[in-house]
Image 1 (cartoon, rainbow, N blue to C red):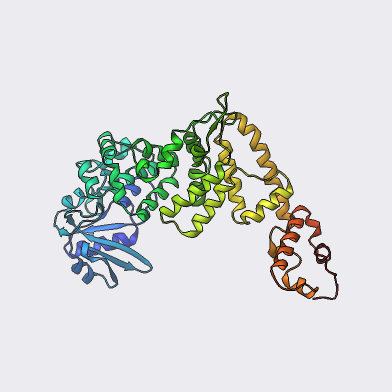
Image 2 (cartoon, rainbow, N blue to C red; image 1 turned 30 degrees about the vertical axis):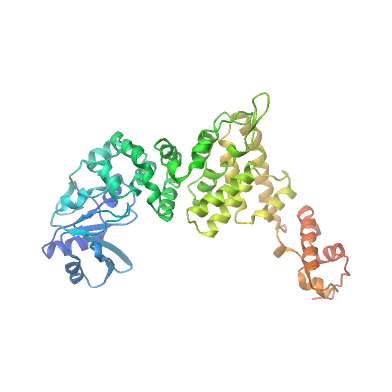
Length: 447
Protein backbone atom coordinates (compact mmCIF):
# COMPACT_ATOMS: atom_id res chain seq x y z
CA UNK A 1 0.00 0.00 0.00
CA UNK A 2 1.07 3.61 -0.57
CA UNK A 3 0.89 6.25 2.13
CA UNK A 4 1.25 10.01 2.15
CA UNK A 5 4.23 11.05 4.26
CA UNK A 6 5.63 14.57 4.87
CA UNK A 7 8.31 15.81 2.46
CA UNK A 8 10.93 16.06 5.23
CA UNK A 9 10.33 12.44 6.27
CA UNK A 10 10.57 11.28 2.67
CA UNK A 11 13.82 13.27 2.29
CA UNK A 12 15.41 11.64 5.37
CA UNK A 13 14.39 8.16 4.25
CA UNK A 14 15.62 8.78 0.69
CA UNK A 15 18.95 10.20 1.93
CA UNK A 16 19.59 7.12 4.06
CA UNK A 17 18.58 4.73 1.30
CA UNK A 18 20.83 6.47 -1.25
CA UNK A 19 23.72 5.95 1.17
CA UNK A 20 23.02 2.21 1.17
CA UNK A 21 20.98 1.92 4.38
CA UNK A 22 17.41 0.84 5.11
CA UNK A 23 15.05 3.47 6.56
CA UNK A 24 11.37 3.56 7.46
CA UNK A 25 8.80 5.71 9.17
CA UNK A 26 7.79 3.63 12.17
CA UNK A 27 5.36 3.31 15.04
CA UNK A 28 2.44 5.55 15.92
CA UNK A 29 2.88 7.85 12.93
CA UNK A 30 2.33 4.91 10.55
CA UNK A 31 -0.71 3.79 12.53
CA UNK A 32 -2.24 7.27 12.52
CA UNK A 33 -1.53 7.85 8.81
CA UNK A 34 -3.32 4.59 7.96
CA UNK A 35 -6.29 5.63 10.12
CA UNK A 36 -6.44 9.09 8.54
CA UNK A 37 -5.41 10.78 11.80
CA UNK A 38 -2.80 13.56 12.00
CA UNK A 39 0.36 12.08 13.58
CA UNK A 40 1.78 14.07 16.50
CA UNK A 41 5.30 13.41 15.21
CA UNK A 42 7.15 11.23 12.71
CA UNK A 43 9.78 8.76 13.90
CA UNK A 44 12.25 7.04 11.60
CA UNK A 45 14.10 3.77 12.12
CA UNK A 46 17.17 2.80 10.13
CA UNK A 47 19.93 0.23 9.75
CA UNK A 48 22.47 3.09 9.85
CA UNK A 49 24.41 3.59 13.10
CA UNK A 50 24.14 6.97 14.88
CA UNK A 51 27.53 8.15 13.63
CA UNK A 52 26.58 7.29 10.05
CA UNK A 53 23.32 9.22 10.40
CA UNK A 54 25.20 12.25 11.74
CA UNK A 55 27.56 12.25 8.75
CA UNK A 56 24.66 12.29 6.28
CA UNK A 57 22.83 15.34 7.66
CA UNK A 58 24.15 18.84 8.25
CA UNK A 59 22.28 19.59 11.48
CA UNK A 60 21.74 16.91 14.14
CA UNK A 61 21.33 16.68 17.90
CA UNK A 62 22.41 13.73 20.06
CA UNK A 63 19.06 13.42 21.84
CA UNK A 64 19.44 9.76 22.82
CA UNK A 65 22.61 8.56 21.18
CA UNK A 66 23.24 5.93 23.91
CA UNK A 67 20.06 4.22 22.72
CA UNK A 68 20.71 4.92 19.04
CA UNK A 69 18.62 8.09 18.58
CA UNK A 70 19.77 11.16 16.68
CA UNK A 71 17.44 14.08 15.96
CA UNK A 72 17.79 15.39 12.40
CA UNK A 73 16.94 19.09 12.10
CA UNK A 74 15.36 20.31 8.88
CA UNK A 75 14.39 23.99 8.93
CA UNK A 76 12.45 24.40 12.20
CA UNK A 77 11.45 20.73 12.55
CA UNK A 78 13.21 17.87 14.32
CA UNK A 79 12.84 14.19 13.43
CA UNK A 80 14.09 11.36 15.62
CA UNK A 81 16.11 8.80 13.67
CA UNK A 82 16.87 5.63 15.64
CA UNK A 83 19.09 2.70 14.71
CA UNK A 84 17.48 -0.76 14.63
CA UNK A 85 18.05 -2.15 18.10
CA UNK A 86 17.43 -5.01 20.50
CA UNK A 87 16.72 -3.94 24.07
CA UNK A 88 18.69 -5.52 26.91
CA UNK A 89 17.45 -6.17 30.43
CA UNK A 90 14.99 -3.62 31.84
CA UNK A 91 16.13 -2.54 35.29
CA UNK A 92 13.46 0.01 36.30
CA UNK A 93 10.28 -1.40 34.68
CA UNK A 94 10.61 1.35 32.09
CA UNK A 95 14.03 1.63 30.38
CA UNK A 96 16.50 -0.98 29.12
CA UNK A 97 19.85 -1.00 30.93
CA UNK A 98 21.57 -1.33 27.56
CA UNK A 99 20.72 -1.81 23.89
CA UNK A 100 22.38 -3.73 21.09
CA UNK A 101 22.21 -2.46 17.53
CA UNK A 102 21.00 -4.90 14.89
CA UNK A 103 20.77 -5.04 11.12
CA UNK A 104 17.27 -6.57 11.30
CA UNK A 105 14.12 -4.47 11.06
CA UNK A 106 12.09 -7.44 12.32
CA UNK A 107 14.16 -7.64 15.50
CA UNK A 108 13.61 -3.91 16.06
CA UNK A 109 9.84 -4.21 15.58
CA UNK A 110 9.66 -7.16 18.01
CA UNK A 111 10.55 -4.91 20.97
CA UNK A 112 7.62 -2.54 20.41
CA UNK A 113 4.50 -2.47 22.57
CA UNK A 114 1.42 -3.18 20.44
CA UNK A 115 0.94 -4.62 16.97
CA UNK A 116 -0.66 -1.43 15.67
CA UNK A 117 2.50 0.45 16.71
CA UNK A 118 4.88 -2.12 15.20
CA UNK A 119 4.47 -1.28 11.54
CA UNK A 120 7.02 0.47 9.33
CA UNK A 121 6.74 2.22 5.97
CA UNK A 122 8.96 3.58 3.23
CA UNK A 123 7.90 4.77 -0.24
CA UNK A 124 10.32 2.24 -1.76
CA UNK A 125 9.47 -0.88 0.29
CA UNK A 126 5.86 -0.07 1.18
CA UNK A 127 4.26 -1.22 4.44
CA UNK A 128 6.15 -3.70 6.62
CA UNK A 129 3.70 -5.45 8.94
CA UNK A 130 5.32 -8.43 10.66
CA UNK A 131 2.76 -8.79 13.48
CA UNK A 132 -0.64 -8.33 11.77
CA UNK A 133 -1.03 -4.73 12.87
CA UNK A 134 -3.22 -3.94 9.86
CA UNK A 135 -5.57 -6.79 10.77
CA UNK A 136 -5.79 -5.49 14.34
CA UNK A 137 -6.56 -2.00 13.01
CA UNK A 138 -9.38 -3.51 10.95
CA UNK A 139 -10.64 -5.48 13.96
CA UNK A 140 -10.28 -2.45 16.24
CA UNK A 141 -8.21 -4.11 18.96
CA UNK A 142 -5.14 -3.33 21.06
CA UNK A 143 -2.89 -6.43 21.16
CA UNK A 144 0.61 -6.75 22.55
CA UNK A 145 3.46 -7.75 20.25
CA UNK A 146 4.35 -11.35 21.12
CA UNK A 147 3.90 -12.27 24.77
CA UNK A 148 1.97 -9.54 26.63
CA UNK A 149 3.51 -10.46 29.97
CA UNK A 150 7.01 -9.95 28.57
CA UNK A 151 6.07 -6.58 27.06
CA UNK A 152 4.62 -5.36 30.38
CA UNK A 153 7.58 -6.71 32.33
CA UNK A 154 9.89 -4.69 30.10
CA UNK A 155 7.93 -1.46 30.44
CA UNK A 156 5.10 -1.27 32.98
CA UNK A 157 3.81 2.01 31.54
CA UNK A 158 2.54 -0.02 28.58
CA UNK A 159 -0.18 -1.32 30.91
CA UNK A 160 -1.71 2.17 31.09
CA UNK A 161 -0.85 2.98 27.47
CA UNK A 162 -3.06 0.07 26.36
CA UNK A 163 -6.09 1.76 27.95
CA UNK A 164 -5.02 5.16 26.64
CA UNK A 165 -4.81 3.87 23.05
CA UNK A 166 -8.15 2.14 23.56
CA UNK A 167 -9.66 5.50 24.57
CA UNK A 168 -8.04 7.50 21.78
CA UNK A 169 -8.93 5.03 19.02
CA UNK A 170 -12.17 3.59 20.39
CA UNK A 171 -10.62 0.10 20.26
CA UNK A 172 -11.14 -2.93 22.51
CA UNK A 173 -8.24 -4.57 24.35
CA UNK A 174 -7.55 -8.12 23.15
CA UNK A 175 -8.28 -10.75 25.82
CA UNK A 176 -4.77 -12.13 26.38
CA UNK A 177 -3.43 -8.60 26.60
CA UNK A 178 -6.22 -7.66 29.04
CA UNK A 179 -5.51 -10.76 31.15
CA UNK A 180 -1.84 -9.78 31.41
CA UNK A 181 -2.86 -6.25 32.46
CA UNK A 182 -5.08 -7.62 35.26
CA UNK A 183 -2.23 -9.78 36.48
CA UNK A 184 0.47 -7.09 36.27
CA UNK A 185 -1.34 -3.80 37.02
CA UNK A 186 0.53 -3.50 40.32
CA UNK A 187 3.77 -2.86 38.40
CA UNK A 188 2.48 0.63 37.61
CA UNK A 189 3.53 1.61 41.14
CA UNK A 190 7.11 1.44 39.82
CA UNK A 191 6.48 4.19 37.24
CA UNK A 192 7.09 7.87 37.95
CA UNK A 193 4.05 9.99 38.73
CA UNK A 194 4.98 12.38 35.90
CA UNK A 195 4.68 9.59 33.30
CA UNK A 196 1.41 8.39 34.81
CA UNK A 197 0.10 11.96 34.65
CA UNK A 198 0.86 12.26 30.92
CA UNK A 199 -0.93 9.00 30.06
CA UNK A 200 -3.99 9.75 32.20
CA UNK A 201 -4.23 13.23 30.71
CA UNK A 202 -4.17 11.84 27.16
CA UNK A 203 -6.83 9.29 28.13
CA UNK A 204 -9.10 11.93 29.66
CA UNK A 205 -8.70 14.30 26.69
CA UNK A 206 -9.49 11.54 24.19
CA UNK A 207 -12.79 11.01 22.35
CA UNK A 208 -13.67 8.35 24.93
CA UNK A 209 -12.80 9.66 28.42
CA UNK A 210 -15.28 7.18 29.85
CA UNK A 211 -12.70 4.50 28.98
CA UNK A 212 -11.21 5.14 32.40
CA UNK A 213 -13.85 2.60 33.46
CA UNK A 214 -11.77 0.02 31.58
CA UNK A 215 -8.81 0.98 33.76
CA UNK A 216 -11.04 0.29 36.78
CA UNK A 217 -12.15 -3.09 35.44
CA UNK A 218 -8.54 -4.11 34.78
CA UNK A 219 -7.33 -3.16 38.26
CA UNK A 220 -5.32 -0.13 37.13
CA UNK A 221 -7.13 2.58 39.09
CA UNK A 222 -6.83 0.49 42.26
CA UNK A 223 -3.09 1.12 41.96
CA UNK A 224 -3.06 4.67 40.59
CA UNK A 225 -6.23 6.29 41.94
CA UNK A 226 -8.15 4.14 44.45
CA UNK A 227 -10.55 7.04 45.03
CA UNK A 228 -12.01 6.23 41.60
CA UNK A 229 -12.74 2.66 42.68
CA UNK A 230 -14.60 4.01 45.70
CA UNK A 231 -16.91 6.22 43.62
CA UNK A 232 -17.61 3.30 41.27
CA UNK A 233 -18.81 1.37 44.32
CA UNK A 234 -20.81 4.21 45.93
CA UNK A 235 -24.59 4.19 45.21
CA UNK A 236 -26.74 7.30 44.88
CA UNK A 237 -30.36 7.01 45.89
CA UNK A 238 -32.09 10.38 45.78
CA UNK A 239 -34.34 12.32 43.47
CA UNK A 240 -31.48 13.69 41.36
CA UNK A 241 -29.64 10.47 40.52
CA UNK A 242 -30.32 7.03 39.10
CA UNK A 243 -26.65 6.06 38.69
CA UNK A 244 -23.81 5.31 41.09
CA UNK A 245 -21.37 8.14 41.76
CA UNK A 246 -18.88 6.55 39.37
CA UNK A 247 -21.34 5.96 36.52
CA UNK A 248 -22.59 9.54 36.90
CA UNK A 249 -18.98 10.72 36.63
CA UNK A 250 -18.42 8.69 33.46
CA UNK A 251 -21.60 10.13 31.94
CA UNK A 252 -20.65 13.70 32.90
CA UNK A 253 -17.18 13.25 31.35
CA UNK A 254 -18.83 12.60 27.98
CA UNK A 255 -20.77 15.87 28.20
CA UNK A 256 -17.78 18.18 28.65
CA UNK A 257 -15.38 19.16 25.88
CA UNK A 258 -11.88 17.73 25.68
CA UNK A 259 -10.20 20.49 27.66
CA UNK A 260 -7.44 19.64 30.15
CA UNK A 261 -9.00 21.54 33.08
CA UNK A 262 -12.58 20.53 32.32
CA UNK A 263 -11.92 16.81 31.97
CA UNK A 264 -9.90 16.64 35.19
CA UNK A 265 -12.57 18.63 37.02
CA UNK A 266 -15.31 16.27 35.86
CA UNK A 267 -13.28 13.22 36.84
CA UNK A 268 -12.62 14.53 40.36
CA UNK A 269 -15.75 16.55 41.10
CA UNK A 270 -17.53 13.90 43.19
CA UNK A 271 -14.56 12.04 44.71
CA UNK A 272 -15.67 13.28 48.13
CA UNK A 273 -19.09 11.61 47.99
CA UNK A 274 -18.08 8.25 49.52
CA UNK A 275 -16.82 10.06 52.63
CA UNK A 276 -19.84 12.40 52.76
CA UNK A 277 -22.45 9.67 52.17
CA UNK A 278 -25.28 9.67 54.73
CA UNK A 279 -28.45 7.54 54.49
CA UNK A 280 -31.85 8.59 55.84
CA UNK A 281 -34.22 6.10 57.47
CA UNK A 282 -36.16 5.89 54.20
CA UNK A 283 -33.03 4.87 52.26
CA UNK A 284 -32.38 8.27 50.66
CA UNK A 285 -28.65 9.03 50.45
CA UNK A 286 -27.33 12.56 50.93
CA UNK A 287 -23.82 13.92 50.32
CA UNK A 288 -23.70 17.14 52.32
CA UNK A 289 -20.38 18.95 52.04
CA UNK A 290 -19.07 16.65 49.33
CA UNK A 291 -17.81 19.52 47.16
CA UNK A 292 -15.39 20.68 49.86
CA UNK A 293 -14.14 17.12 50.48
CA UNK A 294 -13.83 16.53 46.72
CA UNK A 295 -11.75 19.70 46.36
CA UNK A 296 -9.41 18.55 49.14
CA UNK A 297 -9.00 15.14 47.44
CA UNK A 298 -8.52 16.79 44.05
CA UNK A 299 -5.68 18.90 45.41
CA UNK A 300 -4.05 15.84 46.98
CA UNK A 301 -4.39 13.70 43.83
CA UNK A 302 -3.17 16.38 41.43
CA UNK A 303 -0.24 17.18 43.67
CA UNK A 304 0.64 13.49 43.84
CA UNK A 305 0.58 13.31 40.04
CA UNK A 306 3.02 16.25 39.90
CA UNK A 307 0.70 18.65 38.10
CA UNK A 308 1.78 22.27 37.75
CA UNK A 309 0.41 24.74 40.30
CA UNK A 310 -1.83 26.51 37.78
CA UNK A 311 -3.68 23.27 36.95
CA UNK A 312 -3.85 22.28 40.61
CA UNK A 313 -5.36 25.60 41.71
CA UNK A 314 -7.82 25.87 38.80
CA UNK A 315 -9.18 22.33 39.05
CA UNK A 316 -9.41 22.47 42.85
CA UNK A 317 -11.40 25.70 42.66
CA UNK A 318 -13.73 24.38 39.94
CA UNK A 319 -14.37 21.21 41.94
CA UNK A 320 -15.08 23.24 45.08
CA UNK A 321 -17.68 25.39 43.31
CA UNK A 322 -19.14 22.76 40.94
CA UNK A 323 -22.46 22.69 42.83
CA UNK A 324 -22.71 26.47 42.20
CA UNK A 325 -23.43 27.55 45.82
CA UNK A 326 -24.62 31.02 44.78
CA UNK A 327 -28.09 32.51 44.37
CA UNK A 328 -29.46 32.41 40.83
CA UNK A 329 -29.39 36.19 40.51
CA UNK A 330 -27.23 38.86 38.95
CA UNK A 331 -25.70 39.58 42.34
CA UNK A 332 -25.02 35.86 42.79
CA UNK A 333 -23.28 35.69 39.43
CA UNK A 334 -21.21 38.79 40.18
CA UNK A 335 -20.10 37.19 43.47
CA UNK A 336 -19.22 33.97 41.67
CA UNK A 337 -17.19 35.93 39.13
CA UNK A 338 -15.37 37.62 41.98
CA UNK A 339 -14.54 34.36 43.75
CA UNK A 340 -13.57 32.32 40.70
CA UNK A 341 -12.12 35.01 38.49
CA UNK A 342 -13.19 35.92 34.98
CA UNK A 343 -11.09 33.19 33.37
CA UNK A 344 -12.49 30.28 35.39
CA UNK A 345 -16.15 31.33 35.59
CA UNK A 346 -17.03 30.35 31.97
CA UNK A 347 -15.40 26.97 32.65
CA UNK A 348 -17.55 26.58 35.77
CA UNK A 349 -20.65 27.03 33.61
CA UNK A 350 -19.47 24.16 31.39
CA UNK A 351 -18.78 22.03 34.45
CA UNK A 352 -22.24 22.72 35.86
CA UNK A 353 -23.90 21.83 32.57
CA UNK A 354 -22.00 18.55 32.21
CA UNK A 355 -22.75 17.69 35.85
CA UNK A 356 -26.45 18.36 35.29
CA UNK A 357 -26.58 16.31 32.09
CA UNK A 358 -24.96 13.43 33.95
CA UNK A 359 -27.93 13.29 36.36
CA UNK A 360 -31.47 11.94 35.86
CA UNK A 361 -34.32 13.56 33.95
CA UNK A 362 -35.77 15.28 37.01
CA UNK A 363 -32.42 16.86 37.85
CA UNK A 364 -31.91 18.04 34.28
CA UNK A 365 -35.36 19.62 34.21
CA UNK A 366 -34.59 21.29 37.56
CA UNK A 367 -31.05 22.54 36.95
CA UNK A 368 -30.66 23.22 33.24
CA UNK A 369 -33.25 26.08 33.15
CA UNK A 370 -31.47 27.67 36.14
CA UNK A 371 -28.17 27.33 34.32
CA UNK A 372 -29.63 29.04 31.25
CA UNK A 373 -30.69 31.91 33.50
CA UNK A 374 -27.19 32.13 35.01
CA UNK A 375 -25.67 32.17 31.51
CA UNK A 376 -28.02 35.02 30.56
CA UNK A 377 -27.10 37.00 33.66
CA UNK A 378 -23.42 36.44 32.90
CA UNK A 379 -23.79 37.83 29.37
CA UNK A 380 -25.69 40.88 30.66
CA UNK A 381 -23.07 41.54 33.36
CA UNK A 382 -20.29 41.35 30.77
CA UNK A 383 -22.15 43.65 28.37
CA UNK A 384 -22.84 46.18 31.15
CA UNK A 385 -19.21 46.09 32.32
CA UNK A 386 -20.24 45.59 35.95
CA UNK A 387 -17.50 45.65 38.57
CA UNK A 388 -16.65 42.14 39.80
CA UNK A 389 -13.21 42.65 41.36
CA UNK A 390 -11.17 45.20 43.29
CA UNK A 391 -9.35 46.27 40.14
CA UNK A 392 -12.69 47.39 38.65
CA UNK A 393 -13.70 49.38 41.74
CA UNK A 394 -14.14 53.13 41.18
CA UNK A 395 -11.80 53.87 44.12
CA UNK A 396 -8.51 52.43 45.32
CA UNK A 397 -6.21 52.78 48.30
CA UNK A 398 -4.72 56.05 47.05
CA UNK A 399 -8.20 57.58 46.85
CA UNK A 400 -8.93 56.59 50.46
CA UNK A 401 -5.63 58.06 51.67
CA UNK A 402 -6.22 61.26 49.70
CA UNK A 403 -9.63 61.54 51.36
CA UNK A 404 -8.04 61.39 54.79
CA UNK A 405 -7.75 57.70 55.67
CA UNK A 406 -4.53 56.38 57.20
CA UNK A 407 -2.69 53.51 55.51
CA UNK A 408 -3.10 50.14 57.19
CA UNK A 409 -5.20 46.99 57.42
CA UNK A 410 -8.46 48.91 57.79
CA UNK A 411 -7.91 50.45 54.37
CA UNK A 412 -8.07 47.00 52.77
CA UNK A 413 -11.15 46.11 54.82
CA UNK A 414 -12.91 49.26 53.59
CA UNK A 415 -12.18 48.39 49.96
CA UNK A 416 -13.56 44.86 50.51
CA UNK A 417 -16.75 46.31 52.04
CA UNK A 418 -17.10 48.64 49.07
CA UNK A 419 -16.68 45.74 46.68
CA UNK A 420 -19.33 43.68 48.51
CA UNK A 421 -21.74 46.61 48.16
CA UNK A 422 -20.98 47.01 44.46
CA UNK A 423 -21.44 43.31 43.78
CA UNK A 424 -24.97 43.68 45.14
CA UNK A 425 -25.60 47.15 43.66
CA UNK A 426 -23.37 47.81 40.61
CA UNK A 427 -24.83 51.30 40.16
CA UNK A 428 -22.99 52.35 43.34
CA UNK A 429 -19.59 51.92 41.70
CA UNK A 430 -18.80 55.65 41.70
CA UNK A 431 -16.19 57.56 43.74
CA UNK A 432 -18.87 59.63 45.42
CA UNK A 433 -20.98 56.65 46.52
CA UNK A 434 -18.04 54.57 47.68
CA UNK A 435 -16.33 57.37 49.64
CA UNK A 436 -19.64 58.10 51.29
CA UNK A 437 -19.97 54.40 52.14
CA UNK A 438 -16.48 54.55 53.63
CA UNK A 439 -17.52 57.53 55.77
CA UNK A 440 -15.15 59.87 53.96
CA UNK A 441 -15.74 63.24 52.33
CA UNK A 442 -16.01 63.24 48.56
CA UNK A 443 -14.03 66.02 46.89
CA UNK A 444 -14.69 66.33 43.17
CA UNK A 445 -11.38 68.18 42.77
CA UNK A 446 -9.29 65.25 43.99
CA UNK A 447 -7.38 63.56 41.19
